[in-house]
Image 1 (cartoon, each protein chain N blue to C red):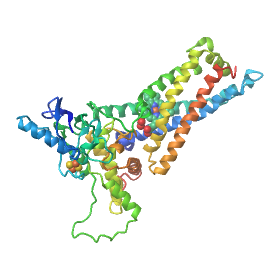
Image 2: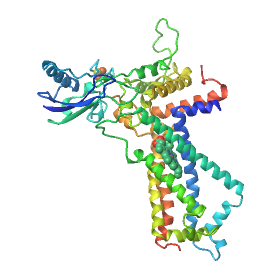
Image 3: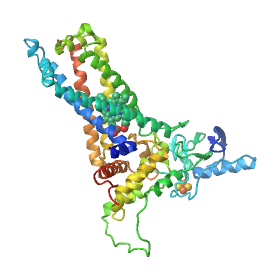
Length: 256
Length: 225
Ligand code: HEM
Ligand code: FES
């Protein structure tokens, strides 16, 4: 197969950036999107040009690094698929494909298609954990958890922090990410004692990082490669309002 | 009030304020629409015995209560609009550069025209108060306390009726997304409940809009005169 790529090239955070067209020739329909980019980069290097910088790590859909906007879709047009797991057979031979980095202010462009997602790490640091005494690992089934709750928490826990939700949201809102992290821990007995404090602190951090506000367009849910549900956002709103009201009544962040 | 400024300073706090004030205004709209439908009871033997006028006088029985209502509504509207503008400003800052290509898969005309629909509604509300409450928009068509005549005479003019019809179109767009969105914002999360909210919310938008639009259209078609 062959493709024309319109790629966003940007030398660094300070550069204004521009689109440059490249031809991708002799691409196997079985190759992944990133393998296709590898081939283009090999030929660029052979010609002495700078390769296209893009982020990637696991290439098996579990790390969330391979963030990019592919032809107007976060992670490309296939539902529930990361860019690294996307195959070229889903594109038409001869198609022009536009590639852009995530465009959200809290994710500054490092170079070309690669952005800095450490805003998400800082949100996790603000409350995406459970305070337990360390020591030997507890017995796995010491705390019984009903299967539907465990399954639901697991669905939220599948978030890989790729940033597609914030990147595809017309408002630049990261609420799908934050609410998945919040709900995953809040719904389990280990995380429940700190649930209101966690919700308040993670939401505050999210706001400080400069993400926008959900208006229920629903783009995040469709873009999410792990198909995480927006119902998490409603649950987070509920917990946040509860924690604010408790702060009024008890002068604290609810629990803690 | 420290807790409230902290709450309002947050994204979810502001979203909650928009949702609560929006739903409060919808509550008012339902009552207002039912009141308006009295026009179809027609003209009584005297202006005092005309149903729509009776309804208007009923509202004025206790002026203190009426002003409390007006003040409440004004507060809701101002809070709604000011908060929406703040939220929109933050959203703009979060997305300083648009994509050259972005294909929406879930956002639709309803969810994307909330601001434009809202601005149209705001302009309409101002006009509507100048027209039928204060009587300064078309002084020749207005006589204090003769609500029924004012409505009939105004809506027999296609231009005025047209403005009201357009306003209900804006209202339909705003409510189609707004009702469901408000409940999501306020925490309705279970898929089954959300589906019910969606069906009821869209039905409510239709009922409110049909109720409102029937008055100018009914007068224009001489169903009542
Ligand atoms: C008749 C008066 C109005 C009613 C009944 C109403 C109702 C609503 C409702 C129920 C929502 C949904 C809240 C949510 O998503 O949580 C909403 C959202 C919104 N309203 Fe209004 N509104 C009115 C007037 C206005 C005005 C005058 C403006 C702007 C000038 C406006 C701008 C908006 C915007 C931009 C949103 C989007 C927020 C979102 O999608 O979450 N509204 N409105
Ligand atoms: S490279 Fe790890 S998810 Fe794509």
